Length: 323
Image 1 (cartoon, rainbow, N blue to C red):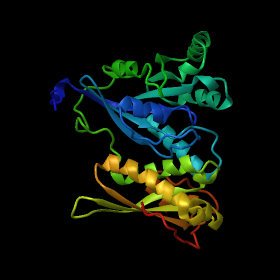
Image 2: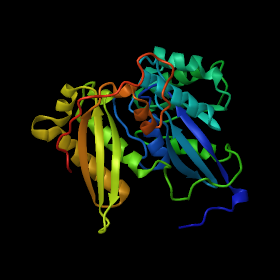
Image 3: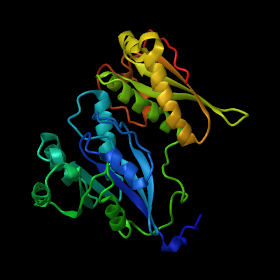
Image 4: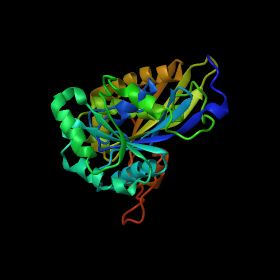
């Protein structure tokens, strides 16, 4: 492996990616980094907390921060997610505003633009999913979104196909402050494997269950044990709010949870570069989204004050899910 440049010649900084839910931030992050560091789903509000992915552009180390989608939050968990997103923006050196060009006129994106004045960091605009609309329409959208706003650059990309993404890295190469790299050259994320493993399982829940249930669940890695032969045993708990939800998660004869576990185990094993034995337990914790401990596990700040906060759960159970 080539040695990184001397510290005096390097640059390093944080670039936050913000946008409405399902604009493609996680897909863009994974494409920029060249590996999967953030889970992806066609459903909105998949990302719940800030995920960092690390890319190299010449002598510059770019730490991208994938933030939860910004939307009109109502529930406590949603409020914490939006707070995390704006926090990621205000803490960064640069902020990329990601727009799904197929929904460039919807109210959520207009509301996002209305608040951009609160961000003091330099902004750049990323128009995503450009392969889905005619070129002439794309130019009109780009002109309208830039009118009266001070974006330092505009990029037109298809994050899913990788088109145009490299230009973002090339542009960032001399935009971040001089300084030593914060991470080893071969590191692609600062998220611990325990966290990534829980996120992978949560992604498989989204893929397997297509109703509202994934939004009512969360996953925590309780134990990560490296055995003498190098294999890894992982115990994870999936929390749901109702017994009826637990039954859906388990499926008839435990088939649903086994399928989720098998899909998650394969991907976790690839990330951990080891043989993995994954054990999933489904427990009922009523109103888990009101429990400050669950927020800490997700890396979110518990919104306060609010009536009815911190209710404990009752009636837990578990089901088969060894993979």
